[in-house]
Image 1 (cartoon, rainbow, N blue to C red):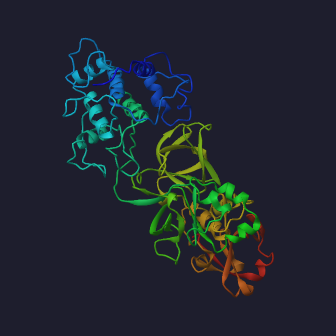
Image 2 (tube, helix red, strand yellow):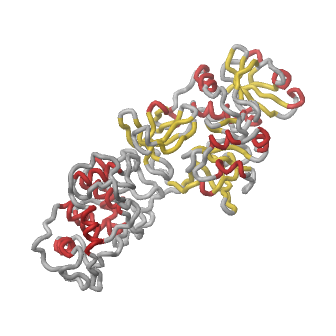
Image 3 (cartoon, one colour):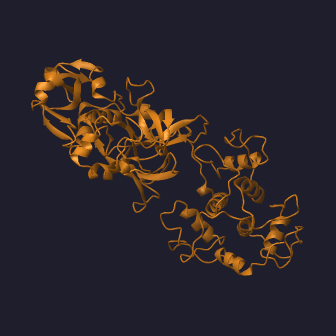
Length: 514
């Protein structure tokens, strides 16, 4: 039998009493303007299903109980709770908290009891149970051949989950699971309810096609590839933490600390970039960055990264247009407002676009759901192959954008480049993939004589006055000048191609722009 916790239930009823407008912000102490689902909760406030109270917490991460879910459904449906037949549950008697709510929800056939004949109002609701309850409560129809990876077609919950999915109430988690046995939070239950009541909230992305093929992606702004695991120093913590802070890392290191990176770090990969996991050791993965060609590994450029920087993903958005950052960095936002910054992402970061809204794009992230980016900060393309063929001046203008950017060994991001990271990244932004390292860039492309140089050509420099191994690369910008990322003591700079030691160490040039 449930106990008569009248004070608790009265407080709960107050929280869900219909009053006024939800125009004031924040709605609750834990739901401010930056909360990703504030709009859905505000809608429920406006409909009288919950009430906003900035002095209390909604409990966004609290798991909802059967009684609390019943209360919201009764209010959403506008059901009359008077003169209902007595519910036939052993643990529910007249006078108990929520008695009228339980009688109503049972009389409507929305929720039933346990095999033991109990309602168990204080028991938490699972996501599978939520699916069944909402489908029945709102008479949702439809099905799909698709099954979430963790929902066997024969499971009792499968038909209800399929119906929620086909009605665009849920798309599941980023790993294509539904997590049917997980308890659902108040926030998530509210969001699903809002999507049913107001179609504008539904997750209906035309380019979203579920694909259960496993892939792996970077889930931090920039991950740095290390030659060995566990080599990071104290000063490197901003680069190996989750999330990372590459700006802090590059600005906090002394020159000797930057020089130490030579031979200890290998390359970098960007947020949302696909990688292959080659092996693992402790808290580290040995990965290959798929679109960074290197003879070191046929799968891509190899190196060690923290396991926390890589996430298992599924290619559900391959049919979406892409938003590619075309400035040194750009901000991702939690909402379509510049006051709701989520994090900074790098030049060349590419994210699928799921929706356009005025001057904003809704983009799908690896693990952080849908975020927002300003249209002015990105290049919008159908796919990588659709990037417009650049002119010589396009290449030069993109390279010049990074003049003054700090040098960072192994850098391939807008937070810092090494010499070949700069040339690789500039060409990549224009849809042209060249090898990652200068030694490999120097033997690919088309050989060019020094007196035939054109803007966009790459110039290479070798030890032993140009006769030894290649150790540096620059990009020719015309008029006898080049731009390059020289060394840890300097930033990206423009100089004459005849400046020493580069004039003496020149060993050849290559053309990648056809």
